[in-house]
Length: 81
Image 1 (cartoon, helix red, strand yellow):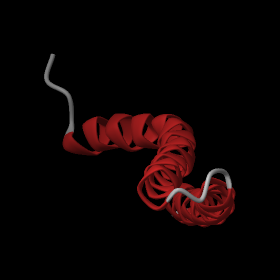
Image 2 (cartoon, rainbow, N blue to C red):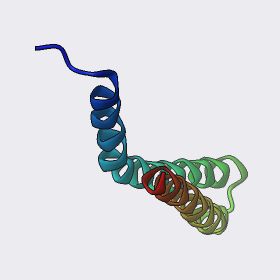
Image 3 (cartoon, rainbow, N blue to C red):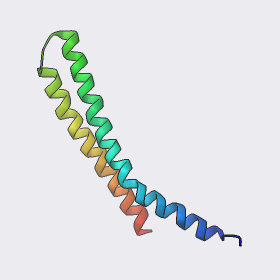
Image 4 (cartoon, one colour):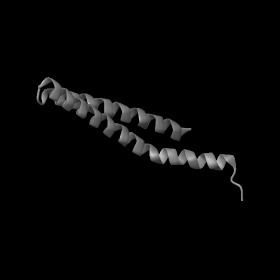
């Protein structure tokens, strides 16, 4: 039995909405991890031990939280449609 286009799109949209939470979490973790690694590398390069690691970790947390909020607001807009 063929599936109508609107039914197929509804399934894909609901899947995107369900998986969107994972996307938000992965965005957050990737931002934090990448900035921590950059801070660790900068510390190793410049010999400033934990200072740049801490600075980059804080920047990574802020960037990750911002990315999380953007993804969450996009998902809310898609859900409300």
